[in-house]
Length: 580
Ligand code: FES
Image 1 (tube, rainbow, N blue to C red):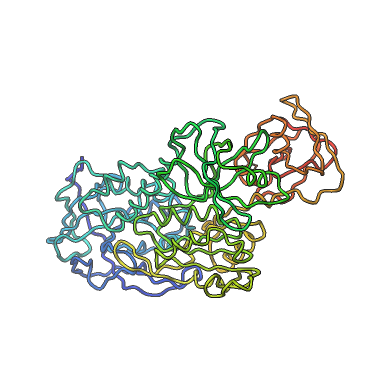
Image 2 (tube, protein in one colour):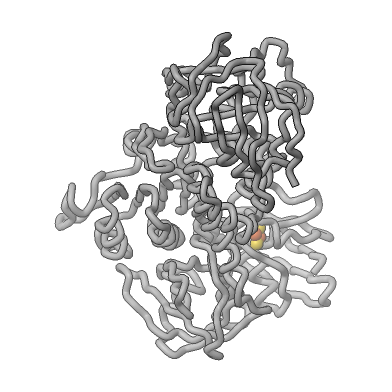
């Protein structure tokens, strides 16, 4: 219940017009540098006079005066030179209910005439973080507090000046508060679909809030879909169809033997596939279909491998076993910005799933598809990707062939002969137009989320280019081919005794079959936990009782002292004992 008896007061009225300023080395158009004016300002439906927003569609931003003490205290900032208007607000207000008790839809009278209605929370962005001297990663933390500022719309025009009284005229009883909606929209919040849908149904909800709610709902509903239909352990599937997807590349459609519903998945996830006892691989789901009762994986045959030749040898109707889809390399479908999907070779499979999932968003933002492969013969799923790109004129692509054939046509089949380099990415790092809350705005390409999948050297090469160009590392998400973690050149003819102490088993490892310790354990009926099988998730970390291991690629984060990551290591001496 809202307390109508509060003595609100206007502390300052501030205005600004958009200007170009340099923030963290980048030229940015913004109106955040607002200055308080010591005179009455007329507020009409477009907000205060002599004021315009650079990006936002909501016209009046208010900040409670308490923010000038709460946040500097919490963050240990010296705010002695923060003048009113520092937060970029039009109205600095005091005595008002804070965001966590203020329902959206509340109508207030400012001064003698102006009627303003609360339409949603401020959605903090990198510009506010720059003003506060905080990294962008602080945005979700700030939103979780709910203390972010308040957007209003003008219902009745009027003059407002410092010292004016603020009265609550009307407040809805059961609508979500400004603070609660900010919390719901934080990236760190799982989100509550009912609350979000309720907020979306508020007649006066602001355009920015509505757009943010729709994006968040994508994330919430994706999570619910992925959590549905999960099973325990291994489940039998059959290969219901096999399709050629390129030279040496096949897609396998996998349907459950029991015909019961399958688990949902997030675009980018993989399936652990057991081809026979002890032979397990993770293969990415290469499709995205929320209604289908099967999965599609696309697998390149590696002649020197053990699993892909066996899979390619299987026929329609043959059985495999699957665990639930898993993996954290997934598309965030709540992002406002244009995703850039960058792959090499068969690394395109999770990104194809992401491209399809992105295209299924209502009015999807643009997307960029960047793919590098040897030539037209190895270019898997080309038609499928081209069909999607053709349907969305603002989706862009760039295709690099490292070794084009004579029949591959530059400008039609591919855009770059050779390797992707700095210049290849340049067009996608510049500003581009984006529809935001009904307005077209310009946003920097550096704000995009970047998803990379390919061999380790490709991933490192692209990551370096992006970081040198100014992309912040937290915007880069990547997955390396696990197929690259082959244990190809250990010393000739070396053998090692491996003891799995808890299960009382022993096995011999040899350079003749230089498999990982994880595979050796599985071959011998020991089932360590695993997820990524490529040295990133640490699920397979196991205590080393004696002996030592060698890594082909150093894991991104080393295991704890005295532990080993089994999925990417082999014995380095003649004996290893593991607590398994
Ligand atoms: S399974 Fe992920 S690090 Fe080994």
